[in-house]
Amino acid sequence: MKTLLLAIFSLSPPAFAAEQHIECPARYPAEDIALPQSGQWETGLVPAGIPLDGGGMYAGPIQRRGELRGSERRIKGGFVTHFGFGRDQRPPGKWFVCYYGHVQLMRRVADTATACELTHKNPKFPDAPTVKLICRD
Image (cartoon, rainbow, N blue to C red; front, side, top):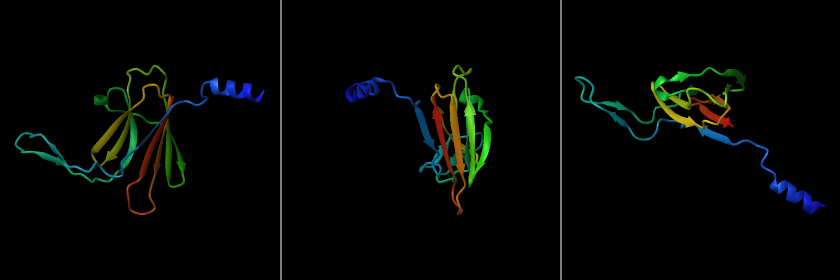
């Protein structure tokens, strides 16, 4: 009987959905970025090492920057924001955004994600916050 039960459980599909975990780097990546010439200016520069300010989510094509407002709840030392999505979101595209002043890093979230939770925790000492995203199918 035990053998039969073990065989049944090993053949059944997993009962949990796929998860995607993403965390913002505490500082903007390590190398400066030179920008192209603009008008009478020779070049611009995005300096490396800018501390993280926070995070958020965009929906749709990244060029439109459709910022989402989820439902937020306070937790000790920060907050959690919940985002829900339909399976056939139009236009497609879900993006996790990390804010470094006026500079942003973006990473695409799986199109199959139906729920995402962004956790923002403020440090006790003067340092960058911790911003994490967990998305589920």
